[in-house]
Image (cartoon, rainbow, N blue to C red; front, top):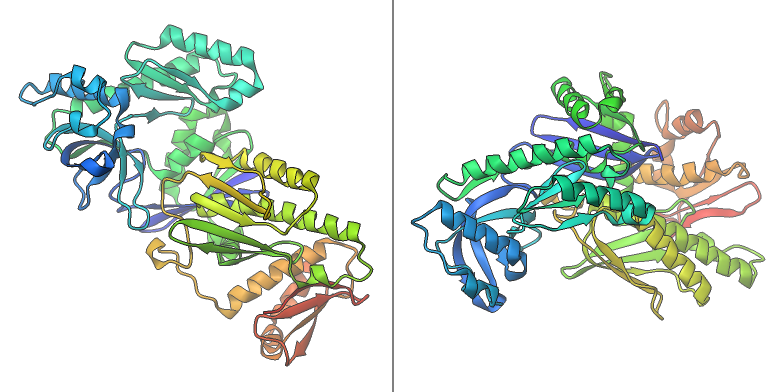
Length: 513
């Protein structure tokens, strides 16, 4: 896979796009004046106990306190509380014996108590910050877990090579200090021991820096997560990432310096972008945002997805499009295979949409009905295979008797939604945005070299819009694709309705409301 990271630095924010084979896979925004981020560690103060929820509200210095559930405290949190109490002799602390036999947060925490917490989830909808006292300090190869003795290892390493798993765990047991746990990340695979040892020493130094800050008066942030650009590099950097382009010289130098630490052999993949054309426009990112982040998402074969969001879940409907019901001389076998093909294509796009929008919670997908259990299993296996590269925790259930696929996906930030002004990504359904979507369909059709004499039947007003000016949009399409798209106005069509046929009058794609 050929991946590119495109970074556009503006005054108030940094936009980061991850492309895979030219397709937008992830889109992130790093806002300069943001008050908190997932991974930030705070010395907070327990504000109140929520007895009915077995949770506590912790003041970390923001207008709204963070939510800490009993399950996010654990043994690690208890040891941390004991440690803080030793550092602060004037601090009232309940005995450990009482906590070990307790299943209530009120037996462990009390209002006014100091506690070290980490942000595990940003505010989403009407829910506030979610906190945990299971502190983790991530690096590229390892994650350090203070107040723990456990050693965990990536599932991918377990599956790839049991001997490598044994080597890494054995080495960690040798070098890991007491009272520290470690997660061995996938990037550690086949790494020499010196590299892992150096990172472990670096992470322990970060922890000692946190300890020095514990003498400060809470609430206070004691460790800030590195900026989004670097954390994304740390978590996703692998051999598939072939190039990084950045349009800001200062940020370019910072990334280059960071790469020299985590992957000095790859330092030349970072390039400073100096062209006059905006960097997101140059790599087609703006166009892809307008095409793929709306309610209706087009697929290459004329089918499309409809994505709806409710308070409780996301619903995704797979629509075959009119053209898939209008093919002549279509046998039952052809119809069944065509439905499978549409569902597989839709599944691939749905997996991309989950990462692109960072959708989470409960997701229900209504695929086109398939009666063949073998095809249902094929669709299920295809979904699981495509989801393997998703870093978010997820679980997929097989298609049920109604053809619905249900799965859950963990997210830690608000969903990216260009229809929502709260996310600062404003979108309006303008003529040019509609043309971008139409062009995507036409480009997909042209890729099939068997299609000749392409004709576009479209609303009369839209037809006039595509033909006006010099060069017109129709002429630009000809220069870009080296094929003339004949545009035929139809008064009976609605503004967004269209039909595309070839010289054999075969319907290639269509949309009618």
